[in-house]
Amino acid sequence: MVKITNVKAYAHQKASYVKVETDAGISGWGEGDHEFTPINAKIVDEILKPVLIGKDPFDTEHLWTEMFFEGFEGGSTGFVPGAVAGVDNALWDLKGRILEMPVSKLLGGNKLEKIAVYGSYGRRKKGGFKTPDEMASEGMKFVEAGYKTIKARMQLYDRDRNPPFNFTYDCIKAIRKTVGDEIEIFVDFNNGYTAGKAIELGLKLHEHFNIKVIEEPVSSMDYAGLRQVVEALPCEVNAGEHEYNKWQFRDLIIHGNPDCLNLDLIKCGGISECKKISGMAQAFEKEIMVHNTRPTLATAASLNFIGSITNAAKVQEFAGMRTELGLNQLFNNSLKFADGFLFIPTEIGLGLEVNEKEMEKLKLK
Image 1: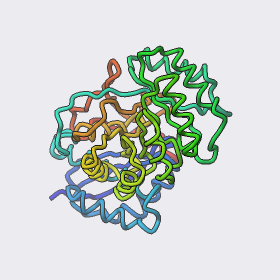
Image 2 (image 1 turned 90 degrees about the vertical axis):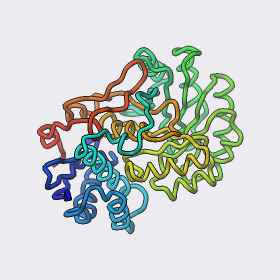
Image 3 (image 1 turned 135 degrees about the vertical axis):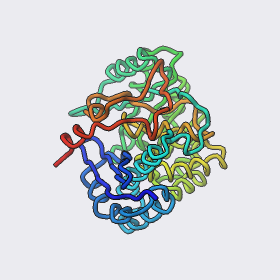
Image 4 (image 1 turned 30 degrees about the horizontal axis):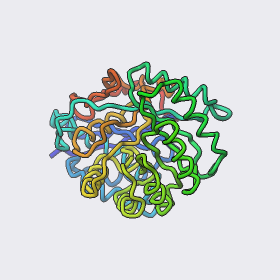
């Protein structure tokens, strides 16, 4: 029996990674939540690692439950499931490497070879917000790279709720004018409106610019308001990036009733938890459209997950390789992208090979 001998957390400025080592000389790597990465690493080191040492890495169901409830008093949302995600994803990568199989096959492959992705980008920039013309220009770069769908994230959040309508309207107007009528446009309100305002703006955006999807129109804590928006708008309304476990997704589906779920594999407990959520979603006739703005192991985990479920949406989120994050140099290979599609990895594990020298050199002290 293979046993876990060590668990190492790597906090970087823009990402957190976990390495799980075994007495077989084989290791697995996973990515956890990218927010407050030193805290993420501390949770892995002080709460999760003691649960794992000496255990069988194939007991992922048992280990997930032990980790989650070991840290439960520290919070069932946010930091703890974000740290658990890094370990759980690493365990799946490890199992794939031990068995010399892609994780998608271990999860139950669906024979999917590639998936269309939409170019996802936000409005915030250093010192404020991009202008509508800057947003249109950035969207056009995705189109020129082969994307048929783009998503503009307004990045309002609860603290800046209900800004003047022209904040969002003018952005989408400029984007539609620049990319043309054939490109699908998604808009992420980022929890920025109350239900009434979201409905009023959503109707205008759909009527004038044929918006395909609106994401998180209201506060993630306002399921009643979300349901109002879902029932009022003719376009699809999605949510789920701020739900961190199966219990929250149960309540989101029952009370908020979004058209599609945006679960995040580095925030919501990792592959093991997200696999359960996808099964529950299928019973409610909901598709899965992963939330994912990280270009390396988060995307690799998302692709393997998508390659194992039968209710994946036809297009998934991808923000591009994002070289400005400085993460791609931590890996010796990259995921395959062509003509607006990402390919499900066929290599063993999650499919990426870590450059451990760079990982060590560039981690936060």
